[in-house]
Image (cartoon, rainbow over all chains, first blue to last red; front, top):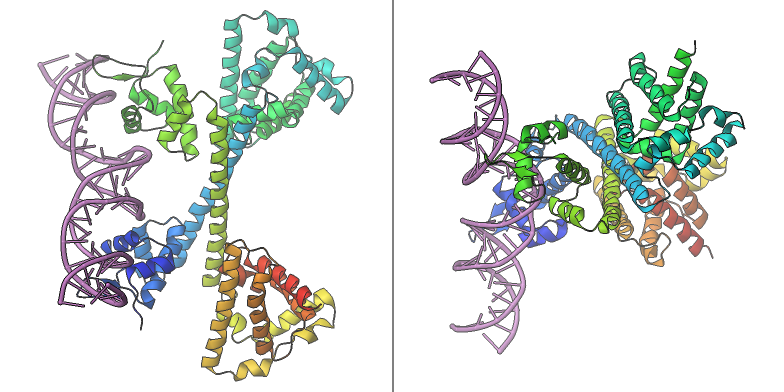
Length: 257
Length: 257
DNA sequence: TATTGACGCTCACGCAACGTGAGGGACTAT
DNA sequence: ATAGTCCCTCACGTTGCGTGAGCGTCAATA
């Protein structure tokens, strides 16, 4: 029948003395008894309860709820745990997403190798253009790049204001698609068609040549396979690259009939 | 040159008006200018800065640091991000662990199918014993179960108090090992030998027969491959099953020379 | 017995990041 | 002019304690 003082409890449980005081104040964990010297003394039961408290605290449950749970007729525990599991796994996913976000941010900050967004569409450099062409040649052989070759002169001849306008158009389209993704609109949904039609027109304008369905579909591939595009779209919204590409392919098939 | 009021900024950015007031108070985000009516007006630059702030806030960075980072000469950003990534991925892992902990807790609360800890070692049921045997037969063929067959009568004949004592012994051993794991003692470290020697003796007692090194090593396998054992040890400390098994194998090799 | 540490107690303020009124001007439209 | 909607500035409340300040208690020693 050994009674422990605050310091001893603090040592074995790892919490601070202040925390014990606090838990006493709010009625979450009262000492087994209090000496006439006003010292707090804790027994075995209190230690066990403290363990439970700490366990639940780890799970992010507010102290008030912990008290309610522990004092409940042991019935709601499962329910509480399930709810907690839900919240936790969401948190876990959130953190995982954040880590990926950071990774992308770091990558785009540290590498000049990672293209800046503006570069990607605004003034596509000749080297980059060559790279994209080579990329597609590698994937499809020599006949493809012709179909999606960029309109170099055209882009070069745009004024700043015109380029600005184009960028804003693109931004609108991308935001619309990202919204669709966030709202769970399925990949090939016809409700996305207006956005995709705008997207195709945008490409036709920028590249200064028609973009038939097959070319559009092969572009989809570029979007999921080339790091620059993936990076751009993943940065806008996780999963957007895949989503966009998938939607593009369905769309291409739909309009080609 | 459109200036936005607090409400408008709040709407497009998703934060509350009070938050904008707060950020102004602490100097994190000042309005572009203030009217003579004391209204706050925000411009494009402020919106962009707010985006940055929110991004960093998502990452769990305290507002003070965010201010410092955003106002720094763009140099420490990478460093800050890396540190943040570290913290975040730890949090992510922590939450993932917690989810697993909850799952185990739920399983052990809701299922009678999930064996209670006590059962696992206290009064090992004949069916369970058969199951373990079958398990090992499946893994090693027919010669192994003989070596680790349980001493049925012995366990059945123990008094409550004796069983209690055994459980406490086991608990001590397990806690010692868990401590080693937490403190980062490497798996096969000789400093673990005393615990493992106790562990082996415990098994010899419970099973009422000698446990030669080979048998001990094959037990290690059972610990990582059978759900009951994995569950038990993972519940004590995440990673303990693997850790214990690894240590057992090294220990078995060490004593067999 | 007196004194010294180490330990205990009770206020009570402080922190982060806002939420939530209260009380009172400012702007817009009818 | 009046209503309705915006905006402002205090200023206190929240959560889970940290961190003293100022003062009693206890065990052991000089």
